[in-house]
Length: 441
Image 1 (cartoon, helix red, strand yellow):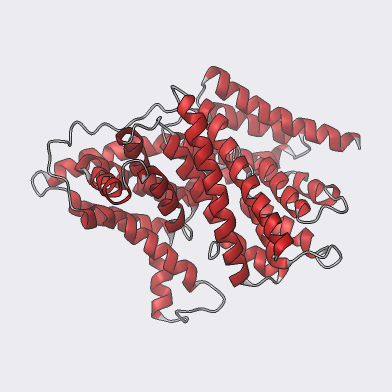
Image 2: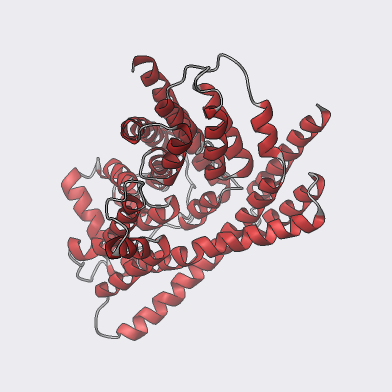
């Protein structure tokens, strides 16, 4: 029992160490997360050699997975900001939905359109529009950005054809259609809770973000049309979505050339590169080469810092995964009469301590599979409870946390204060509705 208590204290101490130093002294997270990874590994029973391997692999794997996606996505954002495409989209949203309702419409639309995209790519694509909407609509900076980030995270966690719900459905032998309906309804509850919370509490904060977009240099230029402006966003989302459908068990596109096409172009990195290529139509022919060279250099400068910090977060998470903490939770986090609360809490606990939604879903679903009949749980609602827990909460050991913080221009202090809290609110609100629906249906 002492070892388990000591283990828990060590995890909490490491988390507090990371949070305090970034919050109090505003140090670059890389210089905190990497030392914290080595210290935690050595004091948690992982051998020095395995700690080094975990740090290297976690850092390298994170940059390897997110690198092209972030660099291409940042380049798309730079092109869209400087050519006025973001303003064109923002103006159209305010014209269609009304100035007052446009932020809510963007949050809902961005979340829905990102259902099949990795949360990171969805946020990178839609965040610039959110920033402009905040300023144009008189919203406190960060209100839409945080709500959008949490909304995308919520939908991707709960709604098929995202990989998480599909994996849990396979483990628990649950029907996809029922999971889809539960996911749509419960994610809407989570998004609504987060949006209203952001509107109320972030509005009272005077310094949530350090990067507000400046449109003075493009106000005098002719704005591109809405169809051309939205092309670099719509095509990557479409390709990634079609890949998700193509990879489903029913194989709707078969296994031939069409499926291979979507498998290739639907990869998030390739889809982002495609979006970058399409964004070039926004540039003027005059001085095309010089303009793109300058903007590409700026995008690389923006994305480099983000990639390094995301890699450090991946290293910290990898060391946590190398421990026996997940196994300890799965063996001891059991109590009777909890119903759907148990799979939710197991998933949330694993997500919180090691940062991986995938591991949280697979572990919690596997544990739930052994007790689902005896506890009288519905497989589809159990899947929903597990996936709701898998987003609760996002913090220092989750690369998405650092992407939202750095790409969204939100200070680290306020990322903990608002984005981490937003994932807690969304996950809890989604689960609350899932539990209520399970009592009715």
